[in-house]
Length: 199
Ligand SMILES: CC(C)(COP(=O)(O)OP(=O)(O)OC[C@H]1O[C@@H](n2cnc3c(N)ncnc32)[C@H](O)[C@@H]1OP(=O)(O)O)[C@@H](O)C(=O)NCCC(=O)NCCS
View 1: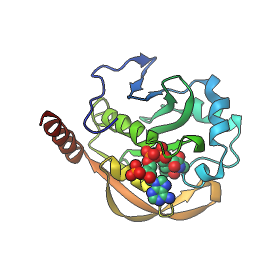
View 2 (view 1 turned 180 degrees about the vertical axis):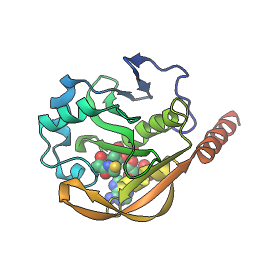
View 3 (view 1 turned 45 degrees about the horizontal axis):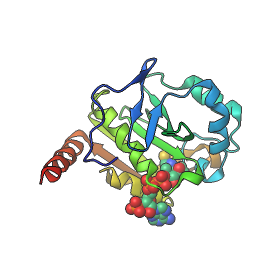
View 4 (view 1 turned 90 degrees about the vertical axis):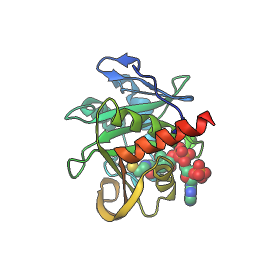
């Protein structure tokens, strides 16, 4: 999915959470029976060391805790699945250090570099600015994580500076490139996309 495409106006819902569909993916709320699949993918140091909250090793009990605690206090968490329903990762909107909602995302290593994270985030961002009516989104990528930085840039995020984040898996803080996406920029990119498509 690109910025040129629209998400459906009224997405299909599972319980209180919508299912966000893109060309190749579906984003849906996690269920307890997903815990094994989530743990099998997330139990990888390359994922844990690039995210703030994911522990390493990552056990089924960690996945159950994540699923049980998801979608509370204004946060929104989605599993990312292929259209054949294979679970490939997760993404969401959380409140980390302040009241500006923050995007988090990870995919299992076999699914990297196929454009899936960018496609999932486009749907998540559209949801954040439309259904959730957020005005600003923020995100961070470790300075040693060019793939994550590239995903954010492809989604229209702008670099705002460097900060320090606590990384659970390394039990320490690490430098993070900080990014923001304002509603006005998102909207302009969507409008530009529409104009371009007509031509
Ligand atoms: C970051 C992550 C989600 C990216 O997922 P993905 O599906 O591979 O991302 P995409 O395929 O949509 O885009 C990746 C981009 O990074 C680029 N990239 C990948 N590795 C790179 C590297 N070492 N140097 C520079 N660019 C790189 C790819 O070429 C691609 O850009 P392009 O489309 O311009 O070619 C995945 O690597 C991941 O889960 N990492 C661990 C967890 C994490 O870092 N989460 C983000 C922080 S919250």
